Length: 230
Length: 121
Image: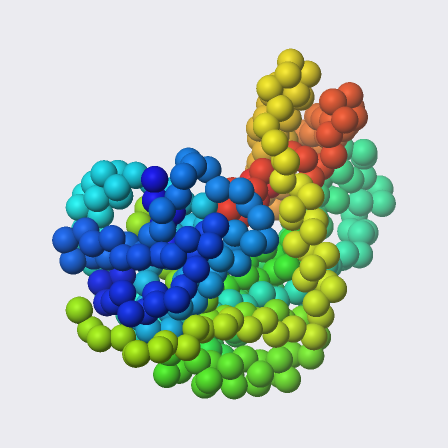
């Protein structure tokens, strides 16, 4: 069996010199007609989720990312040689397209926590003389209106973040959850040469909105942009 | 294939935040909500089935509430109809609360996370 780290059409064996992967086993390239998989020998069909193994996976990816942008496999991906070859040959066109999409770029992540809650509008005056059923629906109306306004504020926040970073972002995947404290989770594909400019714009965003809490991270291999089957 | 640098410097990702505790707490809540393993004993299966059925009922109930509010706002309902519909939905909400209590389910338990699509309710 093989433990799979990533796919690349640019990586060379030199990138992996001295690297140690899962279980301390050195990774190597496995060529599948021009698309190379970075793999290491692995004795089992499952991988223990341990800090050591997760960091080993990340260290190998980090090595490759220093030289080129691969398509990373999710942690714990194991396959035999035949299955790997079949996968690459079956999806070759999609894989080459995905590799071209992420070429020269890295993934950056932004998460935002806010304190917003649905507005509690004043009770309708008409409710005071209404029956129980009518009061119930009037209350639901207030709740719906509050939820809609919250949704709008969340979407405005997401649009503001996108505007702040648009010049530095090649592609993005954003989740907006108005009802949650973690309101925005964004993954951005950023050209390597634009990472510092991206960070500067993020810092500007932080200063502009001191009411929000930001968590930013990266650069990462483009996990979010490697899904062939969204 | 392109040549890589002789000794590529591994890329070390950074994490920046001034509110580490808040984000850690959020991650902890997410991980706590994930099942540590799959239970296939009879009670767990029954609980899981109840959760699925009640989730679907809750979704439909909320859709009915929204529809009722829209019709009320649109002037499609006479006052007596608003009262009757409101009472029916109020009783349905009360019944759902009883069922959730009976199966030991909280509101959050019925809100399936559909990933990129968001939460069901």
